[in-house]
Length: 153
Image (cartoon, rainbow, N blue to C red; front, side, top):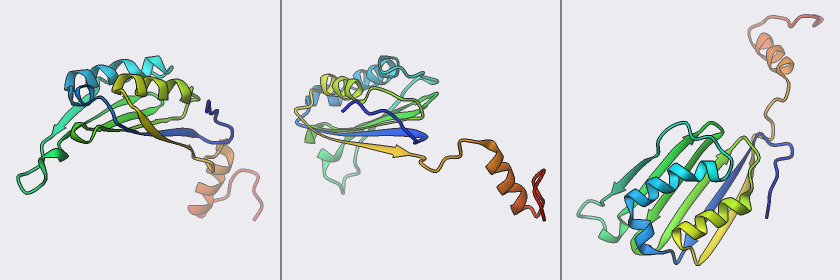
C-alpha cells in the first residue's frame, strides 16, 4: 500500500478504525501526545501544538455520541482525528503535499488506537494544480483584459 504521488499536488490518506481500544480513544492527553509526535514519525513538520477538544452531546442527543476531536497543522497541510470511544471508532485524515509512507502512517494509527479492523482510502489531490507559473500569469492577465508578454492579439 505504499503510495507515491505521481502527478498530484498532494496525497490524502483516510483511515476508519473499528474495534479500537476504548481507553486510548478516550484519553485526551494521549490523543494530544499522538498528534504531537505523529508528524515527525511520518516525516512531516509540525507547525503548531495540537488542539484536542472533547465533545459532550446535549441532553437531547444520545450520551454515547461523546468523543474527542483533534488536529495539528503541519507545514505540508494537516492531520486530524475524531474518536468515538463508546463506539470503539476512530477516523483519521492526513493530507500532505509531500510524499509520505502511507503504510507507516497506517501502522502507527493502528498501534496507537488498538485498531482491530480498518478501512483505508488514498486520494490523489490537486491533479490539475499548475506546475508552471507562466500559464497562471497568462490566465490572470486574460481575465483582467490584458495580454501576457509575447502574446499576440
